[in-house]
Amino acid sequence: MTPALLAITLPLGITLCYVAVCAASPFGNCRKCNGWGFQMKTDRKGRQKRGKACRRCKATGKRIRAGRWLYNRWARIYRTGTDTPRPEGSR
Image (cartoon, rainbow, N blue to C red; front, side, top):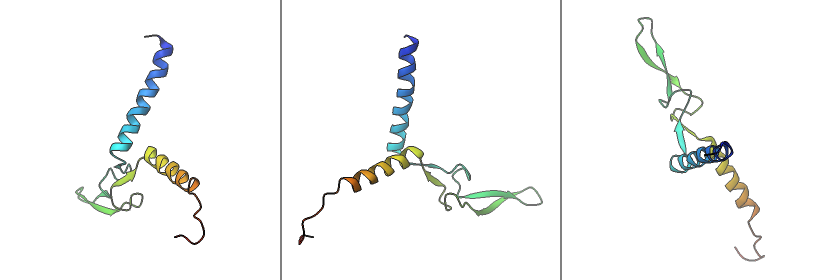
């Protein structure tokens, strides 16, 4: 395989794989709390205990992926731009 062909197919393959991940699983684990929904704290004895709820994911442990966020934004703009005006008197 030539280097030019490899330089074209490798990013294309990575992009298609990421699109498939975003389509199959639009939400990923929160990077701040690792999907727990809260931060872990240690007490004075060194034992782990539950901390405050994660503000980034609102204690759900899930965040929307960047690719899915971009797709949702594009779809919303497309929908609002292609709405045809309704004739007067119809609902």
